[in-house]
View: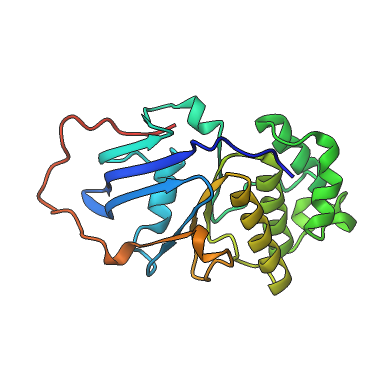
Length: 232
């Protein structure tokens, strides 16, 4: 079990929006997420869930607004924030030619986290022990998703950004992810998760942001001049 994260963990957005190709792809977003909380992103397809997660991961710049991490404004190429954040998108980000175990060890070498000796236990937890030596290209979609989630949990990052993490999982794996997420929050972590499936965490830990119910910025309104696009 990872050690507790800093009690001061806090991710906040104020008036954040995103434009691409001259159109708004994200409504005006405001939230304040603290340690021990998960922000559940809900909304129809195209409402901006993936855009917001990519923005929070530093893969897409904001066109307006501010993001704050632990009380300080996030700036472009913020290495300190990036070192505390784990992002899992629709793609699993695995090397198809490496084995399941090699993918986890590679992830640890690149990002730190648990010691390499923790890899066998992580594979066993996610029901992948018998596939440790198998190349990822031979794994099913569900097995690949479990491996990607095992890499997230091994990384021991304070903030998880997950885009439809339950995709391709069976019921037992869904329940396991709920348990892993709850443990992460109990140890002072936080998460932002886009999902069509209700999260199985205690209600006291859950915050919900319904993106398609938020106000849309005016198409004619230019972004403020003092906004510095965030990316890391």
